[in-house]
Amino acid sequence: MPVDVEARVIRNTRLSPDYNVIELAAPEIAAATAPGQFVMVNPGRGGDPLLRRPFSVFEVVREHGRVTGLTLLSKRVGITTTMLFDAVEGDTVSCLGPLGKPFELVEPPAEAWMVAGGVGLAPFATLGEALLARGTKTTLFYGARSGKELFYLDWFASRGIELKLATEDGTHGDKGRITVPLERELQRAGSADVMVYACGPEPMLEAVAHVAEKYGRPSQVSVERVMGCGMGGCYSCVIPVKDAGGGQHYVRSCIGGPVFKGAELVWD
Amino acid sequence: MGLDLSVDIGGLRLSNPLMAASGCFGYGVEYADAVDLASIGAVVSKGLFLKERSGHPPQRIVETPSGMLNAIGLQGIGVHRYIKEKLPELRRLGATNVINICGSTLDEYVELARILSDAEGVHALEINISCPNIKEGGITFGCSLHGTFDVVSAIKKVTHLPVIPKLTPNVTDVASIAKSAEDAGADAVSLVNTFLAMAIDVETRRPKLSNIVGGLSGPAIRPIAVRMVYECRRAVKIPIIGMGGIANATDALEFMIAGATAVQVGTANFVDPFIWSKLLAGMRDYMQRHSIARIADLVGSVDTSTREKQWISS
Image (tube, rainbow over the protein chains, first blue to last red):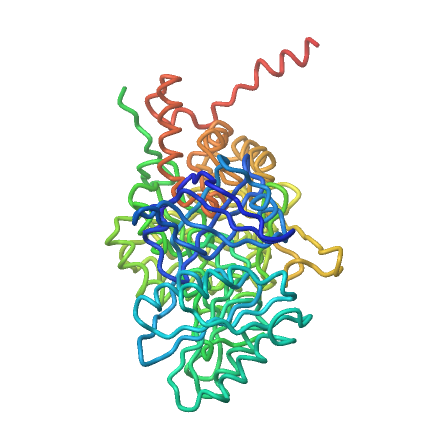
């Protein structure tokens, strides 16, 4: 069951002129969050902005083994993300969650390949930790526009997650889209059992799902649609899903997702 | 002081005046983990057609100042699946169920009313003649006096349930539509549905909604909705269910003082799914502060006399 917390901002770390990681004192939510789940947040006061916005839980923060909060990875693009970027310690952010269907975890001998585009890195910190706890060999494919927008590389590497990077301007890793190293590694993977997890812009998710399918690997993708409530009430965040009969129907990504099997989605 | 929050809507007794507005609360079951559905006066279902509908393609909502536009397009599972898949759970949870029905033709409304009148656990029918987002929907009925009269009287002939047409604000005179509904035998009216509106992305020059236009809801519309409830209160004797941008107990009370016997909450539930207990607590607090034992005594109690005198003397 989701809870609503007026969460105090514990710290706010600006990673770049656009990206920040904000830590919120919402231990009730953090402790109940499974990898891939999200929270609906509103940093505003007096009804501006009116609606909450969805964010994947980035990290579950623990101090001395006790869960103390969660972080959100945010990229400044609109009103809410600007407020989250500008927030200072002691501000409050209303935070509702955890919400949505989490990722399904794979176990050895299966490997996990997490594919992140930009701010789509967000669900992979908790997913990576959960996979490693099961002994699953985990790789992060992480793409961004430039090397300056690749964050938390040490965080992942120090935990034993292998990194495969790509940047559109070629400043770090492969030059081009993240599907470049992904496809190369799939060609090399032989008969290995691999689950592909992806989060990022929808064109990237579509490309990743297709590449995975081409090499006979299943995928789970976390989508982001314009969402009103996060609870299944408003029917705004729908995404087309394939029917058994060859047609399609709209599924609410807040409660039917945000994680879907790559093969079940109909790409617009 | 013992507080009585119950109200009567055309023979339907509600334990309190709060109702979850159609299209803003799924089918109700989505919120069962977060909210005790029996604690809400009534749950109004998402609009139901006879058949399933896929609705409009995304983008379906956009936020605007103190409000939001939506053009969902009445995606829905249809009446038969609703009765089979949702109603048993709603009954088990003790919800008071008002079913919002939508037809493309008079016959469809009548058929829906017949089907639902035979179903266990249906307490009233809200007649959607006001959705601004679909061409074939009941808006054509809801925008004319005759259309409203015809659909309400046809439904009244086939059901024992309270019949509550939901009115659109997108007309010249909503009070005359309410009067037409009353003349046709409506047990109550609910108002307002959303205001037809539009938002454009100036960078791309494209409408922000796939449907181009949508319905505006949220606090932005509240003063207009309060005025419309006030006008309807003076035009009809049947109970009015008021709605439009209610975000806290004060807003709910404003509608009741303007003339609403009950109120519906929609957009605010998106913002805060736990709003219901806060609204009830706020209403109780108000009743205590003003020594009002029965909330029904508040209905239509707006005092315009002093205001008029002051205006005349100034």
